[in-house]
Image (cartoon, rainbow, N blue to C red; front, side):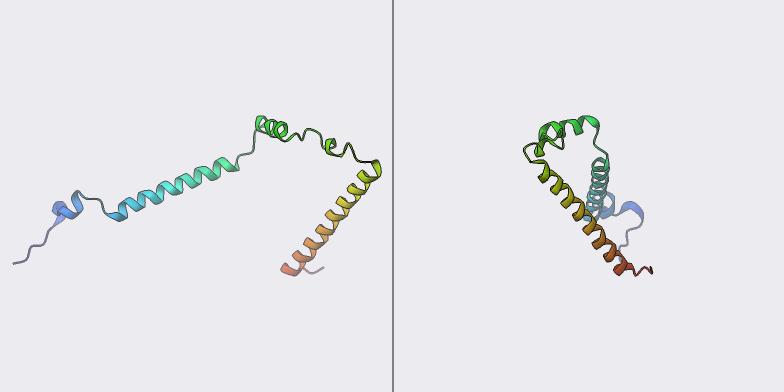
Length: 104
């Protein structure tokens, strides 16, 4: 005669936790933690944080770093920055056209 446990009377399932049960809890806790972290990091910085960052970096005026440059050098720098932006725009437009093969 063989013994076959029936229902919840088996000692293995009634009182002991299995390894899968613990790992399930850890996975759920990790998922919730990542969800909360993503939410917090996606929030925009408030005005107080922006003011603290500006004060800490000393970037209150964009022209403060250029105060000791001669005017012709300021103009040349602005022109170079504008050309760089135009070149980058052309480069990305060509890349986008090549990747997605848009007809002109």
